[in-house]
Image (cartoon, rainbow, N blue to C red; front, side):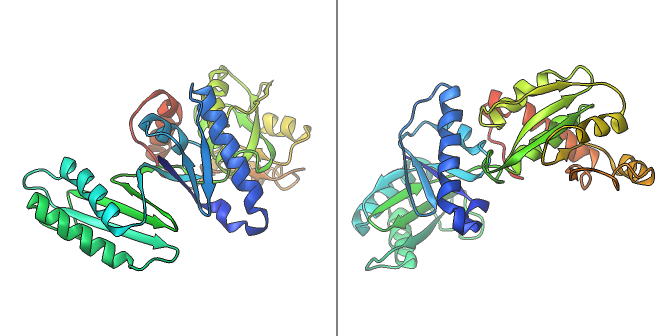
Length: 300
């Protein structure tokens, strides 16, 4: 079983079901285009994929709206079943000289507490492996989630990128006029916007790189030319709800000084403004490679 956790969409309570369904559809569509057909089920605050394939967990972590995924073993809520399954997993991972910790959380009504689970499972693991418990910096962590009538046991997280499901916000236009533009476009997608690209220069590959990040939703390419000021003027003549741009702080000041931004016809967003060059370069590497590599990368 693969557990999928999601974040910001939980804040929009009136539209929660709509956003959850959108996220599920985006996950299904992304996995389908990556060659996987899966069965998905849900319960409050969780999405489950009926598979143990770690590559599916990793691809799902790249869908905006997902905060993390884990490949888990499912069992009942009987404390003996939880203990036996957790010990079975732990014995494979806790080698000689390694320390461990058990982290348990519980929702629903049960005749035991989270602390009871940690104590019982921890004691049995210590007895079976002879290893020490280290709550602050263990070599191996055993996570146990008890949720109503079933439990899940896992040992790791694949971090997602958070944000909102693509398609939950209105379509915007992203200006592509330098190598950093792929990242400002990525941030537009992360805010849940569908995007089109206004491209000046030889950046047509950006559409293919951004396509899986967009949940394989259509991205139209509009060709243009000229400097940033010209591209913004072109953008303002088109029918979009906003414009994303990779401009630096200095470029933004220049645009403000000649009143172009003050007289704008739609909102203009500069998502890269807070970041230094090193951060931007590293993030671009992730954007370019995530759907091509099996390495575990994540975060915001």
